[in-house]
Image (cartoon, rainbow, N blue to C red; front, top):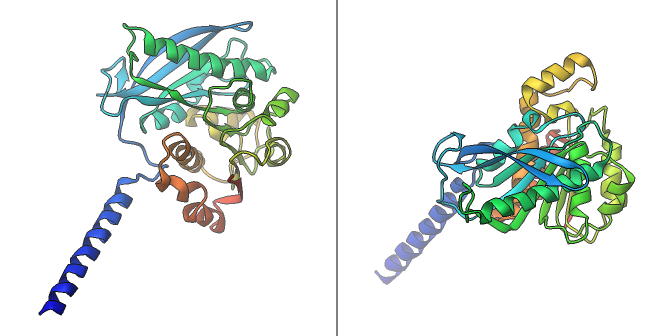
Amino acid sequence: MRKSIVILIISVIFLLICSSVCLADASTISPDQPGTYNIGSYKVWYFAFPYGIYQATIRYPSISNGQRTPVDFSGAPYPVIIIANGLAGSEQQITWIPEHLTSYGYVTLCFTPPHRFSFDATQWSYGFLGGFRELQKQNDHRFSPMYHLLDTKTCGAIGLSMGGGGVIEATGSINSVIDASVALAPAGFPSVFNAAQNIIVPIQLQVGTVDKLVPPNHVKKIYTQHITNDTNKEYLSINGGNHIGFIDEYYTRVAQQWGIDNSAGISIEQQHNISKKYFIAWFEYYLRNLDEYYTFIFGQEAQKDLDEGVLTDLQYNIT
């Protein structure tokens, strides 16, 4: 009789453990899928000396989708992430990035620099740091939609091309406020290389294998030769991805007609899904300390992508 009771108790405990594990797994959204938050937005402008006025859109978790819709305070305070496009581009051409991030409960600021055709990566770097200062102001201003909504001690940054070079420079700058960053096909300039050596926070580099404008070997050089092994870093190459595949679908199709990039081997949707799976997991792991996202960037899920040819290269350094 006693033996039967002991067996029954052990069985119940086992079932409870299995149930809790299953619930934990079920609560983790695959990072390529939309998050649970609606998205509100509004425009801002801010000044960064000596470059001038930056135009930006702030997006935030809201009760419903739309411009200046009521804030959803359920997950506040929210970490912040600053975002930028590349040379000749604007924040209106990469809306898929801030929208995906905001759906996961990040307040995002996506900016366009004053001189879009400039090859000065520092202009983008100042945009990232100035964008963070603008969000701080919004958080402290009583009549701002962001009033006391933000976790201003937790900041991420992500940029494409010149924006990616700006991310690296801003992340490696003196007294940088960035806690984790992602550079998509980052442009390489001396100021970027010099700053990369000073990076001490986690940084992820992504590139497409058929990128004509910023080839994989250029990005990998930043990973291997400029970012030191004293930091957590990751490099991944998306099989069949190109440069323009990192922007919004409409603008990608327009750019394809100009022939400025190699033809992609995967669809725009596929490139977006692969990219966002890795950058969402990166930020969730390093900004929110959510261990369940480890598998998507360093563990079995990441290795599966490499084994199945979704990625052609995956390297990382964990200190």
